[in-house]
Image (cartoon, rainbow, N blue to C red; front, side, top):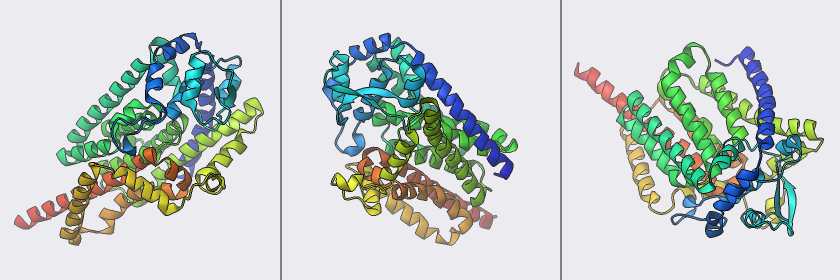
Length: 422
């Protein structure tokens, strides 16, 4: 499915996407900010009341990330004199040590910038501003929150209906279970959590409706590369594995005769789109501003991967295993443990009772996406350990893969029973 010609086309597509992304960010930074400031000020009480990491229920899985959302709002309200430079460097006001962006946002919205300094944040694209800024030009921040929540819920309902039509009740229930796993309430209430969710569910909806065309026209490699590009453009490194793991599983469900090789090629396509678009920001920012954004980006990659010593210097004791443990513990907090325990027992029962049906052809294609979150936690162990309250959502891919495997084994047994009866 992925040959040299298609690979080169994907690379060219990434390069073009970098230029398009730069143009879109310049456009959004050229938009006026006066109405945006007024609408953020009108809804500022939300952040004054909630603080940095509010939780609507007990446990880390219910936390909101007002830390990052405040950064988004500081960027979208920051005065712009040079749209090109601002689009590439993403400046904002912040406290000198930049540890409390919510406090900085409150100060800025009250007109007090005396104790603040200008901080650049160029290693991400900040593509979510393309949605947030126009909405804030039209309405207050609390209304933007509600609009995004409505959109997230509509995406879930549409995808759920399509799952039911395409695969039946068991897979529809499995999809509902993984949306519960990622905690749709928290996702819908935080700007930065919504990006990957919206991109992924939109991708799933397109696959469920247009699979035949994507297969017949051999468009899937480009489709997965596009997912990676859009995720890199809009995400702050939250739970990107979700955006490739779920589409891989749905691709397998839609195309049962697919091979592990094809799924690996689609994963590579996503990776080229994701890594190419992300690193493309560093390069285009350097070319347009002359600032060494590439060094900043590479340094942050080293920090997230525990290659740099920043975490140890800050007192964090982080290992590959600790990152995995923290994410599993966050997933299994509180009442969720009951469902996980029941699910694990049910899965073990299915695997044991149908062990004679287990073959590499059936199991391996599911094990690839199921393993992705753990591979990610090992590679980005520093980031995954510290930010487990949102990176744990990648484990939804593992849960979905294993549930779908159990459903396949059950259906395989029923088919064999029918054949024997005949």
